[in-house]
Length: 589
Image (cartoon, rainbow, N blue to C red; front, top):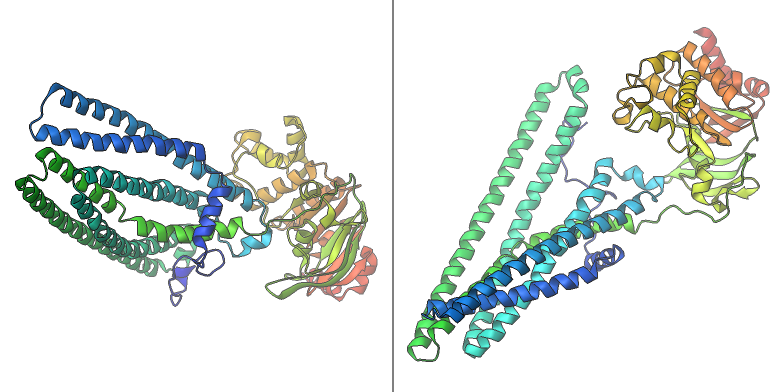
């Protein structure tokens, strides 16, 4: 934890690869991602048409307003203004509703695109992907991209059309007025770019510091017992106070930038107003412009200025969406798991590892592994911690791809089998006893397509857990397990996982230290249950201790990523130095 390592330098939240995304090609990827997310093109076209009419009607209102201010209060003029206001209100309501629906459709489609790629990513991708960041890629980043489309890009298009429509109308009054309005556009756009850039860097500082504080607080809450046990509460309090102070100062800087930008735009707005008044008085005095035309021109110019000033955050949003797009593209463009097309045959069979080598980040984990797990037998895999036993199971489930060599099943390389059908032939329990947040029933039926009665589920719990486990569930099978099984003890989680695996009618059973959290008596009972439930199925049991050898049909010893012994339990027990030492330590205890 950071707070317990005072010399650790605080850093910005990293991206999944541990490096800053390359901004080159970001906009191309942005467009491709939107295209792959199937933008609601028809609705966007309808929205633009409605918005166009709304802008035109709004400009008509300004024209009628100018006439009334100049003294034309005829029934026709007033009626036209009222009608324009009513139509404009209706069009604005429709466009607002459509814009909201389209933004949510974009968010949904992008989120669905990312999620469908996440579930297909190989396990290796998640080794460098913190869970919080992965969740953010699915929940937050698609929303950011949707907001950018509908609240930055789309308004920018409408602003350009508004400038064009105003220029056409003003040109009918006087070409010089058109040049005056158009001349202000570059000044306002440059000011918007400069202010937006300042706002981006100020807000980025706030985002980074807020993310750091959030992560620190999350770690603190999760490790409260550890912090109190090591008596570092005061130091953690100081670190938290410092980070809160940094966030406060970053927010103050953002407020200063906003105040300065408001003053700048107000100043430019006053200068523009003064210029418009001076030009208006001059042209009216020379009889080259009527009062109604000048009032309409004044309102038109204000509309252009407001449209451009409203886009001051476009730079901030554009820079932000660059990072968002890079993070989302990293997932969407990542190569997913590959599978063959051959249907998985029914029944079990020999599992053959042929000269298999595998490693992480260039570091070998398994080297030149050639071994056979015999059909319909219970094979116990033993060896010291970190020798590669669990990795054997993950490779067999095709969670990883071997660097070289292959695994064969039913006489074929496992890579040729269709992935989902292949994995459904295996029932497995990991050493961390994974439990999903839900009911006991939902956990028992995870991955089980068969219809099970309550009596079957309760019988499985009694057989592979105990009567006390079922009796202590407040709502029986509908009792909640909590986040990661937080409402269950470690032993209960392992028992539930074991019951879930052995309940399934899978031809292959993979058990990774299923008795690790059990005491000696419970371990013996669990091993007896495993022995009975795996009869006639090709089963692999990974164990640290030699106790599991009592139920083994076949034994494999893994040391330093290599197979050092394989065969019947009696011969391996006498030939393997690792097992002889393990038995000796057990007898000494």
